[in-house]
Amino acid sequence: MTILEQRKEQLLTTLLRAVVILGAIAYVPSMFAALREELYTLAIIDTLAYIIIALAVFYPKTSYQVRLFLTIFVLLLMGGAVFIYTGTEGAGFIWLLCAVVISALFGKVAGIVISIAVSEGIMILYGVFVYYDIIDQNTTMIGLFAISANFLLIAITLSLITYQLLKVLKEELNIREELLQFMDHRVKNNLQTIESLIALEGSTSSDCERLSRRVAAISAANELFMADPSDPEVDLFDLIKGMLRAGIDSVEGEGKIFLSSERITEIAVGLSDIIRGLTPYGPIKVSLKALQSSESTENSGTVELDIQLNHFSTTPESPDELFENELIPEEWIRINPEKKRVAILIPSEKL
Image (cartoon, rainbow, N blue to C red):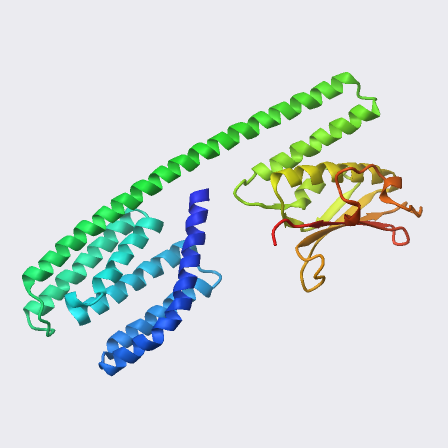
């Protein structure tokens, strides 16, 4: 799914939720007016339309395409009903025009054509009913023809403008995505070059080994973030897994959290130093757990890394006695020698 499609889905969901909330306010006077005028069919259609939109919003398994179809269907249904009952003096053509605009914003060309065709068909049907005295309205054929022609012109104009604007926006987003991919590729190449240069300086040096490990952590953080730049939520599971020794250490649980690209890099390097410092007390078993507000108001939106060690028997006064750490704040670290555990609490950046 592209960034534009994600934004469309989010916008449609927000719009429908607003319609449901505001529609509840408008529903009561609308029903009162319809029942007072003995427009029972219109009252039934209003109720059915409101129920359909409410189900489309709050039923969790409803897909984006189904929500869009139901929204346009309800708008056409409401527009047709209001137009048939109130004629050219009512707001029916406004509902129909709204269906066309929604189709242009969220749908495809076929949806736009169908919405315009159905709207014009409703007006033609209304004209047939008036001509054969099936309904009693004072609308003239010339007036109806003028409204239909103007509606068609406005609907096509708005659709073309919306479609072209979205097309330009999509092209701009594609260019941005290609640029991000290019930058990601260059960053990866540069990091690999740095690792190679460090290796040439001397693989036996502890400083070179630490520097190489940190560069690898930065590379892992960059790859994790660039996997989906539009989503600020990252899973620390993937980050931790790349730092552990295959076949010796293990990680389990879910560590989804909101972090900026800069913060991911700092935390990745800091965790790399900590895990490296704890390897003599291993094998290491890391359990990830998201702390909810019901568990702790202080650590709401926090991910806990619970590191279990097998050979941990010392009683350090500070984390510095166990591992080198410059980027993870000490207040995030909890040491429990009795249970042979080190807990690291990483707070989310999103409230």
